[in-house]
Image (cartoon, rainbow, N blue to C red; front, side):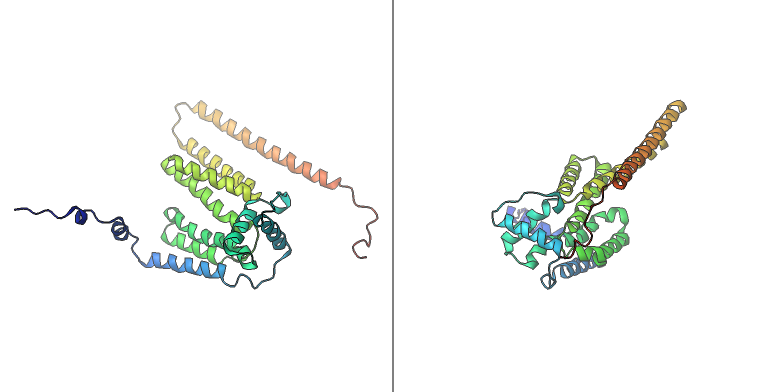
Length: 268
């Protein structure tokens, strides 16, 4: 006679399945955990001891106004408004202080170290670990991860942008386009560097896809020659346009009218 186990025993709990399928703790995972703990410590430890700089004082002041319900009118001098809303949210959740003002930047610094793990499929095991270590000990990243400015927010958004592009190229799944759109939109609200990063991404994609198209077999050599001529003309036109743009900027700067009668005006 065959006995059947109760249905509850056959169907394990979702938590049991999660634990059973969890990541195996090996040397690589242990190193990532150490890097993340080090990132948390170096980004969040003793955030309040350093005095606020001039830029930080402006960013925190207007963020505090927003957290107090006094509104916020964006000024390009403050770069993007994303930082103001994040700092205001930190004030709302944890109270206002020098340390809590720096929480969003510190969290972005930790996130930047963690996001490098996503690129393991492209950099390899030790390449990704090395990149995460460099992100951890980078003087630039460490400084701005403890500073109320927009730079710390830019890096994780840029990493998400490039990861979304790579993953969409591999899978063609729409969700990666959504991630790309979200990272670009948030970057645009963080700082004007979004235009630079987008331009760099487009240049990379143009070169990459042109290289792929040229490697493909062409049914007629004439079509390939026409494509090459068009590609070369577009490249020359782009260089000439950029040259004219920079020349115009230089000319407008040289024609600036100097201030008159300002000698000694700096000291009263």
